[in-house]
Image (cartoon, rainbow, N blue to C red; front, top):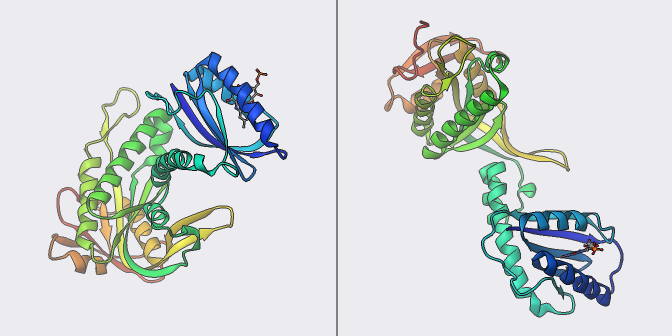
Amino acid sequence: MKRILYVSHFSHDWKSNEIQNLADKAAQNNRELSITGMLLTFERLFFQIIEGPEAGIASLFNKICQDPRHCEIAIIQTEANVQNRLFKDWHMRAFDLDRNPDALEYSVKVLLRSLLGNFELIGMYNHPGILEKIKAGINPAAIAPARIKKIVMFADIVGFSKLSEEIPVESVFKIVTSFFEIVTEAVKKHGGAVEKFIGDCVMASFSENSARNAIGAGLDILLNTSKILVPVTAGNSPETLACGIGCAIGSLIQGNVGSGDRLDYTILGDTVNTAQRLEQFTRILPFSLAMTSELKHAVADFFPCISLGVHDLKGKQTSVEIFSVDCPVARKQPAK
Ligand SMILES: Cc1cc2nc3c(=O)[nH]c(=O)nc-3n(C[C@H](O)[C@H](O)[C@H](O)COP(=O)(O)O)c2cc1C
């Protein structure tokens, strides 16, 4: 069975008896299709729940969407594989919450349950900080930008463009998904946050005192991505996936950027650029992980660090000394 919860706006001023007539007619139709549910009205809004056999719900919802008596229909939740009905005795019961507030309690419970489901989805698609703020009752859009010190990490797949040209897009999709899973797991395990996915690249951040964790996460990523097998052009055996990681520590701005229509809660600043440039620079270094000297100082007691020399990074005015961790996971294997 399937269940759909949606809200819509009145297209005209409905009279109470009109809504009752609609519900009566709906109940008659729904009984034949074994559909149950309820219809709430308040402040020129409908909130309806319909549940029943999958095909019946799909065709009814299609009809409802085309009904000119309401507009701006927004699905709050669609549930597939529903085992139990919420309204087994009601083929369609209408409540006018403006006149009958007693019906509110149950409706609010149902609404809250579906909102919780939506929360999880918001968390999956957005920066974890957004959901934390919403749950704490803070409007994320109203947060003023703040300058903070953080560790930024960029991790991406080496040779991704070439790979995309050579193997089917479905395989590319699978590889990127596996890569993102590995990076996300390592970042979370070490207490960091995935800031965003950018193409085949992941931008993550760690608090300023988590240098050891950030580099630990980087080494985990390198170790685990080296286990992913990438199919190559016909006849050749698969290769292991290579990735590059750049890490920098410093001050940056965290906050909302964008327009009134679309906001992105993100981090910006020189530290972010440096981490990204370092990650790009690993392409020509003998190591897959590169970090700044300030970060090296913070982790030197925990990892055997190695200087990779002083280099000019694209877009940076001064040369920087680049460091890595002197261990087999970070050191590139000589080409066979
Ligand atoms: C807010 C709203 C909720 C509705 N809910 C139902 C419903 O649960 N069942 C139903 O048969 N029609 C419902 N309708 C009416 C349908 O849009 C459509 O007019 C009706 O199914 C047509 O029925 P008929 O094919 O028997 O003429 C609803 C309409 C609106 C505006």
